[in-house]
Image 1: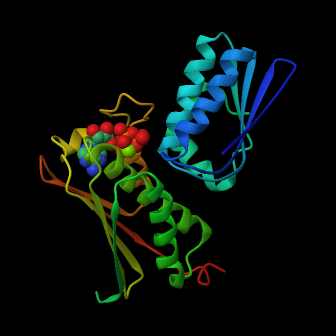
Image 2 (image 1 turned 90 degrees about the horizontal axis):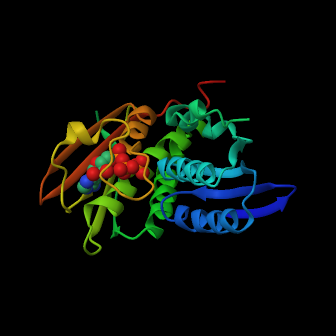
Image 3 (image 1 turned 120 degrees about the vertical axis):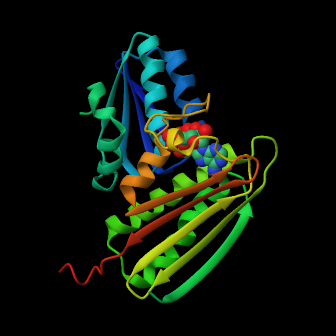
Length: 100
Length: 146
Ligand SMILES: Nc1ncnc2c1ncn2[C@@H]1O[C@H](COP(=O)(O)OP(=O)(O)OP(=O)(O)O)[C@@H](O)[C@H]1O
Ligand SMILES: [Mg+2]
């Protein structure tokens, strides 16, 4: 699901396993809770350990982007595994300028 | 085109079954010796169709989702995902990228993903009767590619 760590204004969400409609709401509430209490300058979504993702994951990323932007922070998406490249390309997330 | 293998599944439209249906399809196509990319494509496309049946088809109370999967002699995988839910009024509009009727955090990309991750997608739907999505993909042997 997700491990969250905070240091120097950066909240890092290390996602792992399969991201689908079943699990996405739980990831969302964990990240949002921390975002609201810590008000990080940057939210980093790390996909290194994600083995599967469908469009529910795209919705999750878009939603966190809106959320952190409203709180005055910015977002970075890092470590996209090769197996997820195709869905990221299709999603249009690249055009948000958050992919590192 | 002869059918060399066939399986059917049915389960309640609850979200735990999204992962189950992906695992089942994955196990079913494994004898074809698909590439990692082919497995990922089929799992993703099936996940989209099953999730749609779970999220959209039965808004009031859970119903049943049916999967019918076939493998043909010419290495074609044909997967039908069917529900007997509310149906789709305008299929063409529903299939447009970014179109969603959901107020949740949905991207509206499910059908776009199905289309780009399989060779062919067919949708039949009738309001009040339900929806059937048929996904087709040819699996090229992993051995062939070496
Ligand atoms: N099985 C179904 N029964 C009823 N309506 C459906 C069904 N599948 C899709 N739809 C309708 O088609 C729309 C588009 O589906 P699509 O999967 O492309 O996007 P989404 O499910 O809304 O979002 P996403 O898949 O990105 O999470 C849905 O919002 C819904 O209105
Ligand atoms: Mg969908």
